[in-house]
Image (cartoon, rainbow, N blue to C red; front, side, top):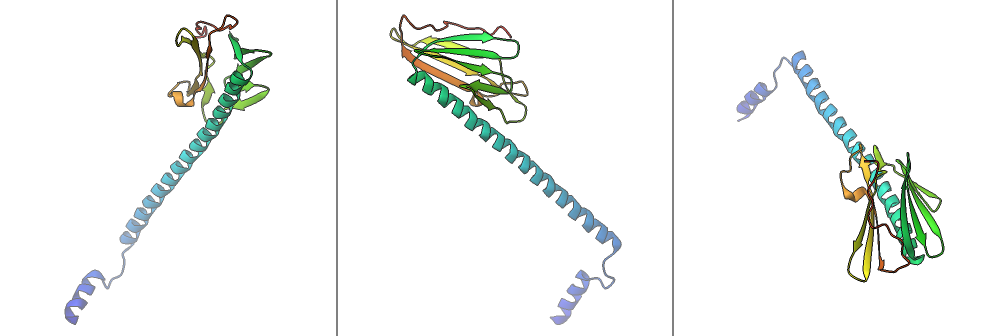
Length: 185
């Protein structure tokens, strides 16, 4: 039995040692594996950065929507006007006792003297907003404003957009646009 084990060990371990070709092949294989691991770790790092930027933008969007819709309810929204300028779009909200303006620039939104910037790479606001006035029934209406967020100048999903909604009773003192079309398209 000992003899058989010695012969098998002799076949596995050549008495000549390791050739330079075997060392070279081993180094190449280890190098390839290390390079692949580095590439995977770098791509994971980039994914993590994009996710954190998207999370920061999500928090910013949520804050903007919360602040504006809070004003809609507390200050009693009475009307909306939309004005397109060369490098920005203005949405003027008329409340019962005060007017406020939402200014949309390519990289930020300004409301109530607070600027909210986009942090995501290649993300910009579309200056062509979508506006809908919907008759829900004879007593109620719904206003929906969608401010698209573009990634590489394409609106890929509604999840990133700023969407404002307001529902109220119809009144003769309300001043809402019945329709709106962006002139910049």
